[in-house]
Length: 333
Ligand code: BYC
Image 1 (cartoon, rainbow, N blue to C red):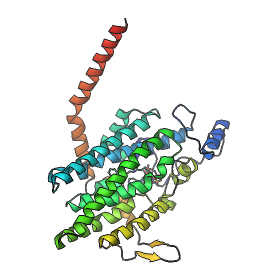
Image 2 (cartoon, rainbow, N blue to C red):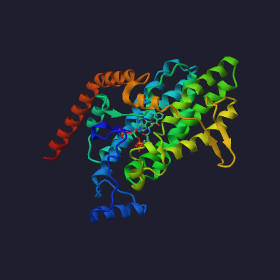
Image 3 (cartoon, helix red, strand yellow):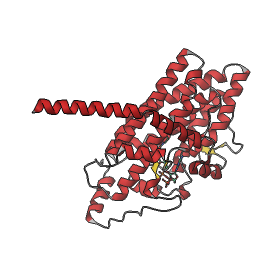
Image 4 (cartoon, helix red, strand yellow):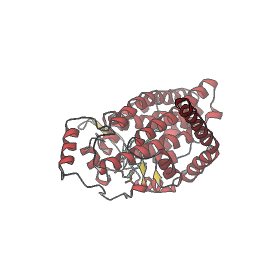
């Protein structure tokens, strides 16, 4: 989701609301207001470009780091079918990372620079991937809840004002939808299985519910970027609105599973036609984001190791590309 290299600290209203101070900015905002897509070669305010690089790269990093908790279960999936499906899902996440790095590159930043920001710990990625996957049911809970939250957050991004990001999101959302279903199917199988399997599903829901709600970001009042991102139509809904939509869609799914949610304040509000819920532990949210979650250090170690061990592949690919280019040059002479 983010490059801290851009120096925006939580709590800052760091990028000022554009007030149409220049003619170009005013024309830009008019294009946004008409729901036109902004393309890479179009003029854009520097703040718009930086906001997109921050969000798209944070998103790309999340996809790549997100492969780790699930990758942990590929060798221990309970059947060949489950293993094949999980492998495909984890490969999809790598693909999402690639589309998103590609979209960020259209804004004039290199992939190497973005990856360096992740590996050095400067860049943020989603808080959710700093929690451990301790049982097979966690793979079900991640698909159901984490991919479910991702879809709720990402469907509106298919209408994001920046063309390359919105187009990448269309394909990503289709794949996320398959991911969500495979997770729910695992939960359903466990919930209808033995008492021990049902207990495992309940335990996974207990551990993943609150972190999934944190994926939507801080309360609107504490969200640094929402106002400007909504004015630019990068974001179409606020963090709290999307979180509420996710709760309203997910609670009936949990009830169908016969599981209970770890929130005693969760109840249907007839007047609002929505679920009331308890307060998120924001202290935990900020602690995880700042690098002190259960798995932050492990995740960074694993990504750095993979990067170092992949150096020969990057070198070989660069040498091959150079050889082909030299051959093409020689043929053209
Ligand atoms: N975790 O002003 P706000 C996936 C940061 S991948 C970490 O509201 P914004 C999947 C935020 O960056 C899931 N940091 O920010 C993959 C900001 O810090 P800075 C990733 C968070 O950008 C594999 C500060 O808090 N999805 O689904 O307007 C397998 C203030 O927040 C988080 C995306 O990236 C967090 N949860 O709104 C399965 C979607 N929340 O930058 C699934 C695209 C907030 O000022 N991103 N922060 O230092 C977005 O939609 C938005 O960036 C957010 C945050 C809604 C997440």
